[in-house]
Length: 127
View 1 (cartoon, helix red, strand yellow):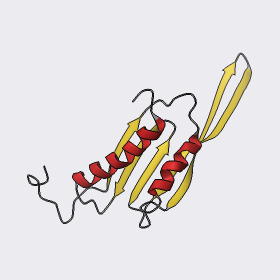
View 2 (tube, rainbow, N blue to C red):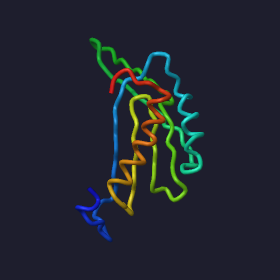
View 3 (tube, rainbow, N blue to C red):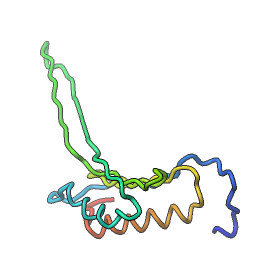
């Protein structure tokens, strides 16, 4: 495919994203992602926690019902230059490649490498 389409010196792409949503097994623990992070730390040394916050506001008759839910739902790993980002979450996997964008082959291959680490460890129930 790369031979058919030339790489552009100034590709107009600002960000390439591979995003996969899934359902994890009940026994899953978000800290399992740290073992993947250990395998990625040479290429993605910056680790950040991803927080999930949900607030629901409703009415039951004349009463207001407010409920909140907070949790850590994953980790984000970044390359030193900040142009490659991996998000390992309890609802999915995302690989981001920011500008300068090299080629789809590069994005696909790196996303697949990390996706394989994710699925080998986590074993999603549904993708």
